[in-house]
Figure 1 (cartoon, rainbow, N blue to C red):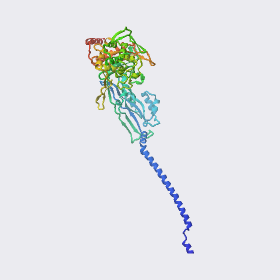
Figure 2 (cartoon, helix red, strand yellow; figure 1 turned 180 degrees about the horizontal axis):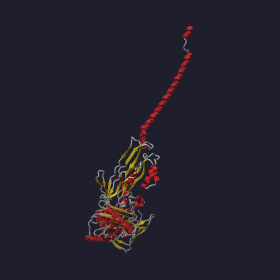
Figure 3 (cartoon, rainbow, N blue to C red; figure 1 turned 180 degrees about the vertical axis):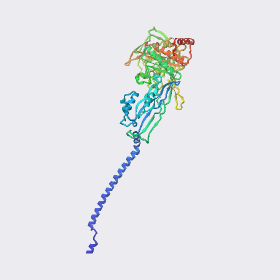
Figure 4 (cartoon, helix red, strand yellow; figure 1 turned 90 degrees about the vertical axis):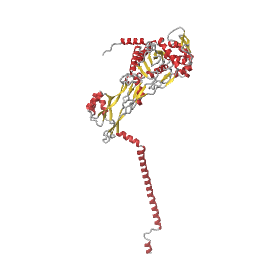
Length: 608
């Protein structure tokens, strides 16, 4: 027994062994669960961290790089020098001159108040306003503009002060040497050199160039410059220059003459155009009232708009060329076809009158246009018919833009054929119930002058390429509108208008001139017509080989008649243009020479 007891000492009994086994199994299970839980927890944590790192370093990296760059880098934009705008001979119309931008670097600024007081005396600004700009902004921007486009004289005075933290950089400023000269064509650019109106806006992509940048790196607060980084400058790239079709001398004379006519005839506004019919090149384009392109903000927008392209008006009798040309083209009449013409005519719900009372008479188509008979022209239009008249109006380009590609150009107002009412067939032949721009009407006369072929008007003559080579612009698009025979017949008719019709005031000694007067009532906004008028004259010279087309419109002149106001203005402009262009006289040259000599003798002697 004792031996058995000793042999069994240290051995558990069956019951105790079973109990220990169950205890061991329960302990391992809890530890394993804890280990597994911790393993998965750490795995998920590290997985989330890894995923976040991937997002930060891959997906969102560009955004953070940009954010860091914005916090670290500060830059100032340096406008590029815009290309010049020149006339066809290279005379400057718009150039960029060197001025200076004045800016502060807050890091190097020592005493804002004293600096502001010194600068205020030179910049003629309130020192309090300058001091406010000298204080670091809450965004931490290092650079701050104090003044833009200051003159070299002011810049020299600022430089002589040697102010800490005040710097200057050359920046171009748009300058228009002629001030008001061709302002409606050129438009203007803003302080940053961006074209806002006119040619400056239309050819922005050519003129603008590429701006430069002045950049430096600093700490995110903007208070400490990073010495290892310093600053860098990306130079601006100048824009290319443009040559316009304008002739500077013709432009100046046309503007002067138009302004004088507006004063003489008390007109509210006016436009004048000189164009080459064979190329579409616009040699002069003037409007009154004028504005100074160097100070555009001093003038309201209605003064700055280019009326010759943006404003529409009922052309009146100047539009009768479309009716006559279409009737001749379709062979429904000849220049000698005769109509019985009373001084008034009832059609639909309207009564139409000629400008002056006259007994019923027999008039040929040529005489109807020569005397500008409304009643006779309506009869020609009725014989032509509404369908063919509508096609002719559109074929001459009315109702669509001319193709000049000028900002704000109007397409005019032409009724769709389906919208015609009873009297429309009678109003359109005499230039009522339709609205055109001066440029559209000048182009129509250019079509007749160019033997029936329309040439799109153009203002861009050439560009100055990056290599410094002058590159001519593409030729203007052309299309035939009427036959050469029809254009020749219309030229003869329009020559008679000037020789012995309503346009005698447009006669030019030594030159054969063809043209047509227009006197049209201005429609009221609510319908009907008021007591204001638009007078016009459009024509070309010489008649055999037309060199120029000229159009003049005067808004509400006194007297109202185109033959008394617009025609003599046309004569003055056209006569000067023909001489300037060296066009030889075509008729009665001796008389022309005598009249020119007489004019020269009457001019006052020049004084030094």
